[in-house]
Length: 362
Image (cartoon, rainbow, N blue to C red; front, side, top):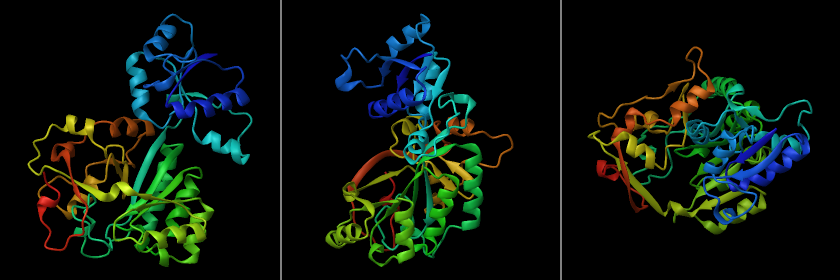
């Protein structure tokens, strides 16, 4: 079988090496990407136009998307006329590394014949926060009482997601402040029970990091959870860096948190399609009580609400729902997109009540 390998450049080597080891009958006759960058003049690369010409001339048998978690790629390849489009689940590389790879699997599949992958999923462990950031995009500074996630509902929803998706590339546990939830280790375990190869990322402001319990530290290390620490100027960077190093944790300081953004248009007269197209949050797929949406706004705008619609999203428990149907809906604008605007940046700062709607509204 002759295929073009399509995907981000950084995925090429791993995919080619894996296929050479496990599917020597598959011949990769060209490497393709939306942006070939420094490889544009290489004899090993082809443009999408060239790949399509090879396909139409019967010189290749199809195209293999090495970024199988990216639904935009599948949509693009379908629109161009490729068929079949193959995928190789990304977790196979991890299975190869840990020795759990099954020897009798085909490893590559026509993409509609297997459960899809999710690029990422976000989930609030707590809606409230211990830091009142001005214009918090999750409205956590407007949550006046503690609001914790329900572990029973979460376990049910994660099990349902495992019926719809084969893998979640990145699973973000956030808030609010996720370390306010005393059962954070239970949620981490629940994610790994259903999606053992997902990368768990905990987005935190870091203020509680130095006081987390040993059991939580052990859970972070056991499951190789990554700490994404917002680098606010109120943080003691030296202590955080020392703590992370001493406990051998995976972490990074997100220096871009020097800025926040106004993004709401309460009048609801924006061009939803145009806003969605340029939105930096449109791939921040969010889970809340059995529903899923392209971002968190449908589930958290209730804390702000100025007559902006709430609870838009996909019901995970719809009869006959498939993961592919969810993916296709997630890359289309929501009704709620009309209530967003082009982002307007401003310098991060702590705010105090009474909060002004201008903190969020353009």
